[in-house]
Amino acid sequence: MKQTQNFDILEIPDSWRRGWLKDEPLTRIFALDGEVYRRKDGRRTLKFEHDGKSYFAKLHHGLGWRRFLKSLFRLKWPVSGAENEWRAIKLLEKLNIPTTPLVAYGRRGTNPVSKQSFVITEDLKNCVSLEDFCRDWPDSPPAPKFKRALIKEVARIAGDMHRAGLNHCDLYICHFLLELVNNQVPDLDKPILHLIDLHRVRQRPTLPQRWQVKDLAALHFSSFEIGLTRYDRLRFIESYSRRPWRESLRTDKSLWAAVEKRALAFYREFKRRGPR
Image (tube, rainbow, N blue to C red; front, side, top):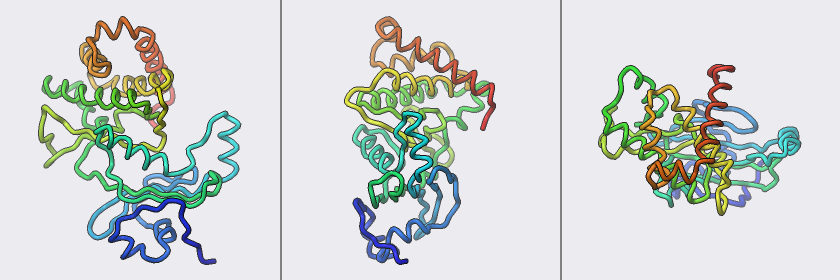
């Protein structure tokens, strides 16, 4: 049966609209072939090539009743489409936080059980995750000035997000991509970091402390084994809070105590289960 192409939302480049997506765009997009990175919960993530450029597509096919009801029974509203990701990209751009450049997105239907949606972004080719970049720091520490610049930028991104009411939900260092030129950091004083994996980002008028703690604890835990010092942690707190670290530790004592406790819990669970 031929699919109808009635969209609630559809944004694609004009050249694509006139070219390969001229007829039945949703059918063509959901039939994309490429290197599959993830296939889970009605979502397929793949990298594909078009006109000599590479892109990432996240294709959401709907949760189905089983996954939808399972989330409700756990008192959680499920992430059921690509809207979260494209909205998060636009919000981060307004905050001057680099992320994956948005190319196209669309949605057909509103029922989380059956709606179809997609988001397509550019492939950030010349980047490396902070997890990989910092892996050898315990044995080969970076220049102190460069390390401080990286910490300051991570803290700026986290702080600007939280002050805008945004939380990431998976704010691990592997989701920060460091921009490179010829496999080198072009400006050691001003490293450029792209924040990725945005499908669980949420925005609220004011960010509740429990979500602030979750993000900060994820950052803290995921940097346990890269050789950061106590003073590195204090520099992060100072840049994140935009106040001297002594003042922040005094006035936000409960926040930072909760972050430390949650990060240690993450770490114990990680050691118990091992890398996945």
